[in-house]
Length: 452
Ligand SMILES: [Zn+2]
Image 1 (cartoon, rainbow, N blue to C red):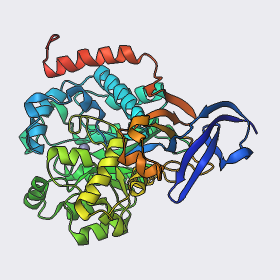
Image 2 (cartoon, helix red, strand yellow; image 1 turned 180 degrees about the vertical axis):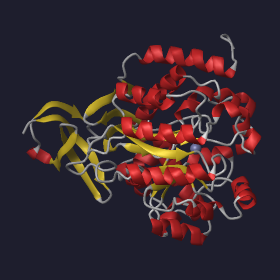
Image 3 (tube, protein in one colour; image 1 turned 90 degrees about the horizontal axis):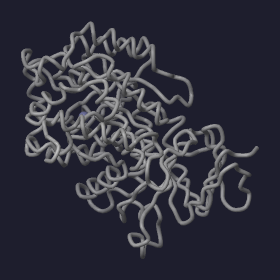
Image 4 (cartoon, helix red, strand yellow; image 1 turned 90 degrees about the vertical axis):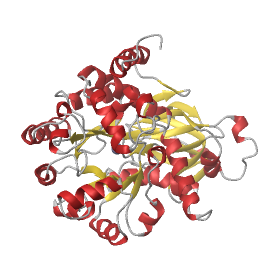
């Protein structure tokens, strides 16, 4: 059977423990048709040579806040703690509109493609206006990106002891009704889906107990996944002790979230026993190395969590905390952080790549189809570019070289068998216009006039 596309002459990383030097991968109908080496390659309508290049599964982003690219590197809060940073930015984010959410999602996905990401979730929890997630899904569909939207929420404003202004929080009934509407409209459980939806209250301290409990109940009824920030900051420990009389993980268990539907962002400060309990329950976590280091707090010990039985993925986190969205850079940082913390034998490039692929897929409950390139998987993959200068002398291990040398950029990013990034740049329609609109909207939100 003639393939739609053949990537030829690659160093092919198919999955953990399966690599093919001089390999090829054939794609048909958005799926991996076959992989192999040498002369038995099938006929294909289009052939892309990946000569002397590494080809990997697309990286998976398990935690992000895309709209924040409208306030990147925002000078008034670059020196703030997490809670002060949030207090400084919420009034800006209260200006989000349907247009700015569409445009910021479009730009975020273009940037993710450049860093080798083929599937991303987005934790969209600021809702000053209705239908913002609808705008995000519109942008992802126009590009052809595999998108895991999450219906974020906040109910506690400053008046109720929370951090955000009243204009960005919503009442419980509005949140729950919109969660059902979005799930029924967009969540596609079918194999090879391009759009899925999870429920994602922002954090334990920003929503009411009813929202946590009812979100878990709705997830069960509609077969959805659940996501939130957990054990990110010591302020959260103090808040939970004072309001709920327990630790964040104990509260998470109490509201019915400790099950295989859930994945959490950060998970920095649980006790050893709590890690064991959530791992046993099937909860996954997403480490965000650059964001954690930028904010200057702690970071999860990803390899230790794995040893204790928890599946771990990676996320680039919000575009105003990390300010970039290269999943290659997150993967490299995860490796550096693991070795910095636990020594040179603690983590390899393959361990980090496994977090960014299989680990992310586990977070999204999607390991049967994404995060690897076994025949039958979704054809989501990346041909990587490193300059000949950066690779000079790197002769003995292409996967270690990919993450140790660099910076690496995606040369070609393919999602569902379609080339969405070519020669290192997105093929997205009307990207220049979108970037002009993004600048206009970001200037308005940051109150930075043209010329400054
Ligand atoms: Zn986050």
